[in-house]
Image (cartoon, rainbow, N blue to C red; front, side, top):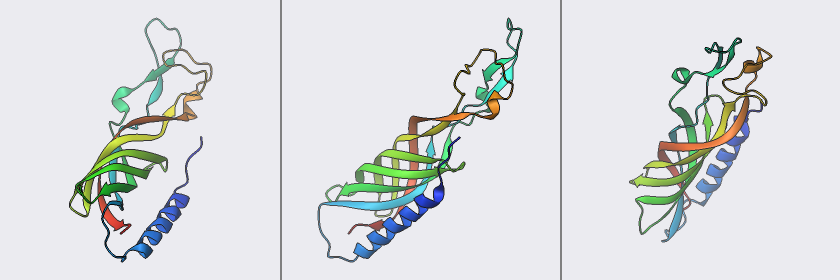
Length: 173
């Protein structure tokens, strides 16, 4: 299983924040601006939970999905770049972010944001990231040969919804 490392993401984020802070203080302009925000995000990218169980009509145990053991949402910490225009400062039509899940897997967020003043914003859209999946050749509802097959789940990239609350800490202007 391949996992993303969080240290390069943090280093890149700090570099971007330093570059933006160095540009701060220039004379005010009108038009498009980009705000760097960070906050908490909830997404629908949840890992399925599998187990070995008995099914009537099957002589051996089969792979079953346990929906009642799965989470309904996944929480992330994320940083966003929100592009907005001074004519409509309450709306950021483009909000793109990168987040880290609790299991150290990276997630990409793309959507729009509703800016609540100069600092707070509510953002929502599509989250793209990894979730657990059954190994190749293993099918839900079918008998398996190796009983340890569920101990080494693979990951696959998929998409789902996200919604988050962020705080603006820097702007390009």
